[in-house]
Image (tube, rainbow, N blue to C red):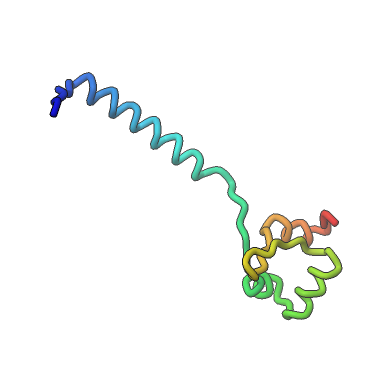
Length: 88
């Protein structure tokens, strides 16, 4: 089994690379993310009933995604509907 000697310069280079990688990661974390809400959360947020939310889906007022039987709503879409800027 071959052994390698790690020098102080190697450790310094590793440290700088690690710091740069951490900065990049943290910057990506601060980027605005799309937030997806479930029906229950949307109903609570808008103070509407299940039927009203269903009507908003059916008539195309509120876009949604269905994944594995669960309906998700994009927070940006909800805000657009509230501001009267529905995409459909």
